[in-house]
Length: 114
Image 1 (spheres, rainbow, N blue to C red):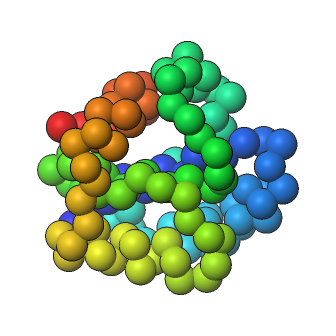
Image 2 (image 1 turned 90 degrees about the vertical axis):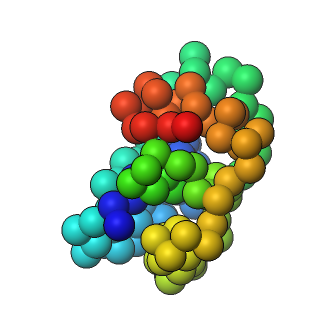
C-alpha cells in the first residue's frame, strides 16, 4: 500500500537536522512511500492555528487518503518504519479532530485527505 509520509520540521531545530539523514535513508529504501520533508516556516499560513510543540512531527496518509498518524516521533532508528508498517496493515487511524487539524496542510501539499 502506498503511503504519504510527511516530516514536519524547522530549519533551526538541531534534532530535525540530525534526523534528516536517517529519514532520507529510510524513506529512500521504501518504493511505496512518497515522502516530504517540510519546513513549517514555509507553510506558516496553513499552520497558523496548529500548535506544534515538538519536532520532528510525522504525518502518515494511506493510499485512500486517510490520515493514519499525526504526531511527534522520537528520532530513533526503526520508529518511523514501525509506524508506517502499522499504517499499511490498517492498524493506525487518526481521530476526526486530528484529520481536520491537518487538512489545510495536506491540501497545500496536494495529498488527499478525508
